[in-house]
Image (cartoon, rainbow, N blue to C red; front, side):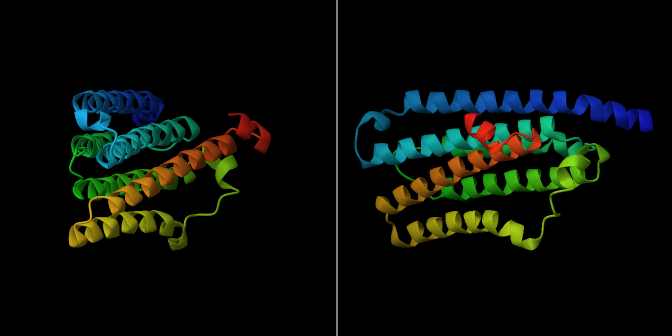
Length: 216
């Protein structure tokens, strides 16, 4: 059994990265098709600004998922579970829904789906890091990192609550102009910030200095 576990752990990174790369490629293709087919995006009005904001958020979301998986797989070693090869399909479906919901009429369902993507991404990150902490090969990194507490979950909880509150507020007020725009601006800002945070994590894993991190 130990040989089987070692073999699974050895081949898991390649299998997972191949799977996630295929799913992300399909999501990018769907996003490109949405841009080409959506004539309203080229009308230069408020609807087009909101639409482009949704396109950018979907793109940053795809990029964030890719950076998350590549950082986790190449930076850490952990014992894979069957669910690790299933969750990427769930995230892929969420991404496809997010892209499909981009339209001339803003739908609050887009915000709720985006909130579910945040939940999935943080769940993957937390569960993977928790198992990585138990592997001796990651000891050099985790000896300086304390285990996560409830306080560490407040940022993702706040993000999900923000998206849900925006969605409820838009549904109640039927405000489809400045409020969706504000929600999308906040979302893009958060996604860019998370990608930057992942770059800092990568720099920490690689033992890069602060100057080297900025150069990368």
